[in-house]
Every structure is written in structure tokens, then in C-alpha cells.
Amino acid sequence: MRHVSIRRRFCAFVALSFLGLFAFSHPAAAAPIRDFEIYPQDPRAYLAMSPDLPLASDTFLEEQHVRFLKFHFLPWDETSRDFLLADASEYPGWQENVAKAPWWEKKDRTLIPRGDVDAIAQNARVPFGSLGLLAVALRDFDLRILPTERAFCYSPASANGKRPFDMLQNSSVKPAEPLLVHHASNDGNWVFVSAGQASGWAKTSCVMPVSRQFADHWRAGPFAVVIRDNLPLFSASGSLLGIAKLGTLLRLSDDGQAVLIPSRTGGRGDFLEEITLPNAAVAPWPLPFTAVNATAVLAQIKDEPYGWGGSQGFRDCSATTRDYFAPFGIWLPRNSKNQSRVGGAIAFPPKSTLKERGEILKKQGTPFSTLIWMPGHIMLYVGTYKDIPVVFHNFWGIAIREKDHESRYVVGRSAFTSLEAGKEISSRIPGRLLGERMQSFNLVLQ
Image (tube, rainbow, N blue to C red):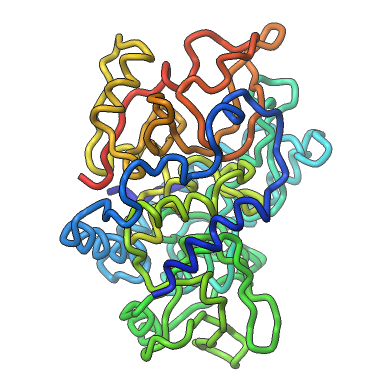
């Protein structure tokens, strides 16, 4: 699999997850669609099997756990260093193209001066590869395409300007993720790093170089996984160390009684700090992949605003599916196209109708473990509701015709929908419904 470049407590967990469905909600990003009223937004509505039914064999899942750790710890693997460096070395050419383009500020939609863009690009200091340091993420942070927090957006007057995303946002990193530091910016405020799933620029303050001894100790486990989304991590002194998204992998102490996180608060150099987390917020990793646990995980990430590349602490479509599988020890790559190859893709017949594709999905798809792909988007098949196929996904919007150009009817959230979401919108572009655009599905557990 290619590294994406510029690109015990379970019952309490389930109970609190579903309480959270009604106690908390994210602000809606945009307009509702009819599917939100027709199809239940409670994941339990799609439980058509025994709640405690394992969704895969123990043997298969054990193989997946080994695979997960291999890719999670790829930056600390000596044999992968040249591979990751070669991957990162593709970056300067891409960066050069980005730096040449005109960009607009996100906050006020004004043109960014050419001198500002050139200064940011020069601060990147290419060529790459002079450091090669093992490191770990001290907190959650963004991976950037250029060493700046400044948001670069398309022209408001262009068709792409209808997607007001920060195009320098590549991905996001969770607390305690292993990293390989390739390079530092001219001003020392940024480092270019590879995580297990993506590469990009990180603020130097978010990254801690570690020794091989530290890396080997951390890698040996055992591990705990965060099963409550957006969990604050506090030090023993009460300072906020970061926010852990669902799927964050942390180190258990050797006796399994405490959670450890990397920290600088204990002094200089490598340091692990014990922290206390609520019992229902963390569980021994991996979580058993049962139907009830699958719905409990989905309850944590439903109704989340859309976040391009993980921007603003939210998820996009592929981050949603990736974090859904992570607590169960199943690794997905960052990119939706690469995710569609896990387990092997099954193509829909090219000339099949939406209805025919839905029937194929009902017959061959496995609820809670089948991904559906179309160019630029990925969804999780969760089963049927009144015999209609239902998917869970985080999506920006529905393709519509606005005056003389294509635009989006913005939805901007994660939800359970049919394959015809938005069909009632009068300005939608024919042939662009989800079911009409989907090209393949893959059984992740096959």
C-alpha cells in the first residue's frame, strides 16, 4: 500500500455513546435534505443482526491488528526510512506548483499578495531529507502543504470557489502518533514530517524528537484506544495537552492500569506522563468488532460538520471511514481511492441503473464493513431501511446548476442517507446522485 503523500469497558461505552446521541449535537453546517427526515440518524436502527455478533473471525482480525501496527509505526521502522523520504521528496515539485497559483484569503476572500506566497515557499527550504529524526506528536495538529497556518482558497468567482476549503490542508495527526522528521523550515518554526498515513508541514512545537529506546518501548504496547470523540487530554497539573479524536491510539502502562502520553512537562528529552481518563472514554485496543460496538462508534461521529482534510478539527469522507475502523484494529489508508482497494474492489456494471446497483449492494454487501467508492468520495454501507440501501458518510453537498456554472447545495455533515440523497432538489444536476456516480464497493473484511 502506498503512503499517502501530499496527500471490559464496552458496555459503558455503548450506553454513553447513545446517551450522547441526544445530549450533544454539532451545529448544522447547512441546509437539511429530505433523507434526514426519512432515514433514522440513530445507528441502532440498522442493527439487523445479533448485537454481539462478531463481524469477522478472530484469525482474520488478528492479521488485521498486525497490519494496523505495521502502518501506524511505519515512521519508526528503519526499513521504511528511504521509502518515506522518497515519498516526501515528491513534495517540492508539487509545492512549487502550489506557490505559483493565485490564492485568496479564506477570512475575507481577498487576493493573497504574491510576495506573501513567495516568502512562505522560500521558508520551506528545499531540498528535503537532512534530518531523519524519530519523533512523536505531542498533541493533535494539522499537516500543511506549505509551512503556514494561513488558509489558501480558490477564487470566489470560480466554480471551485463554491468550495470554500483551505487547500493547504493535507490531513490531521492525532496525539501520540509516530512521526519521522525529514526537514526544518528556514525560521525553525515548522518541520516536514511523515506520519503513518500522510506527510506535510507541522508546527515544531507540536512535535517531540524521541530516542530509539523510547520508540521501541512505546511500540511494544499494550495499547488503549479512545472511543469517545473529541476527548480532552489533561496533564496531572490540569493543563490541556490536546484533543483526542475517536480512534486515537495511546500507550497503556506495563501493568495496564494507566494511560501514558508523550509529554515535555517532566523535563528535557523523552518523557511519558500518566493521565487519568474516564472509563467510558477509553478501552483496551483493539475493540471487539461486533455489531453493537460498530453502531456505538458510529454514534460518536454522526452529525459531525464536514472538515476538508481534517480542517477545524472535523473530518471529511475518508477520515470518517478511517476513524470508524481504527478502534477495531483495522487500518485504512488516508485517501478514498486507496481505501476502495482494501479487501479488493468489486465494480458495478458500467451501464447498470441506480436501482440495479442498490440490489447488487443488498445482495453482496456486508453491513458495517463494506465501503462504496465514487471519484472523490467514500461511504460505509450500514444495511437497509424498509428494504432501501443506507450509507453513512460525511459529505459536502449535492451537485446543482447555479446560473451558468456547477455549484453545490451544501449539506456539510456526516449522516445516514439513501443512495438518492438530495433527489428532491429541483436544481440538482441529472446523473449526479450518489447511486448514479458510485463505481465500486469493497468488502473490507474479506
